[in-house]
Length: 316
Figure 1 (tube, rainbow, N blue to C red):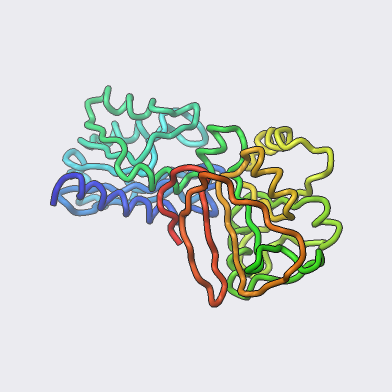
Figure 2 (cartoon, rainbow, N blue to C red):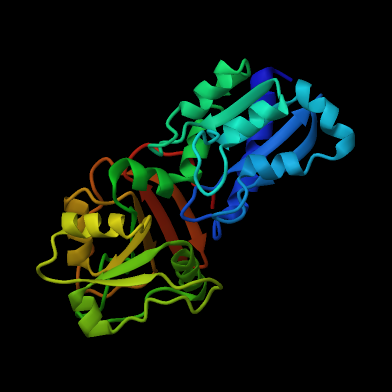
């Protein structure tokens, strides 16, 4: 097997491990690490909980005593650049150097201001061979919320709505249930995975939505209502200062249009149901240039997901 294919194989394992930290690693990124000697995994781990050991720490801790002598000829695979600064835990780059591995394969560089290539430089200065960018898109996609938050100083924004086959979000301007049992469950799963959820004042006053997690397991997101006089840029600044890394925008159409026209969106999720209303509130337009990521069918309903820019394939 070619070296690149071997590196991709173990980086995919890193991504599998990293995803286990989706709920408890926040606000830290999800990271997985795998230690390989002679095409055999001798250690692996992931960042399980914010404030506790990082992926590299857990991977080294899992190496059995009999395999420790193999570290000097091993490669450590990490989905995100090893940290080089002191935070709640010591720098992982220092640990890798101290353990004496000969090679480090990194999925993507950490955009966090206190890392940004410093960990890679530290490893190379110590004589460790470092390869960067293996499955880079997939690694960036996994932590898209974290990267957007630190790069753009705002949450990662998911705009979502359910619509009839003829393009309305309600019937005769009156609220109506469009989602089926499966898509409703998926919506609540999404709520459990994101930090905050927002609706416009009209939706709040008319529909009185609970905006909680009821058909899934997990915490309910922070609830927000957009008022008449609230500038979106100010809202973004406030949410950034509060450490909100992700935001679901659920409705209605005017709120959707406000975010889309301001370019404040990263992901667009549209559920279409096989019903026609004939009259009601029309849906917002999908922005020109939106990239189709996936189309999935749940019974007779279709969930279509778009991204604002080029992204890795969405794992659904």
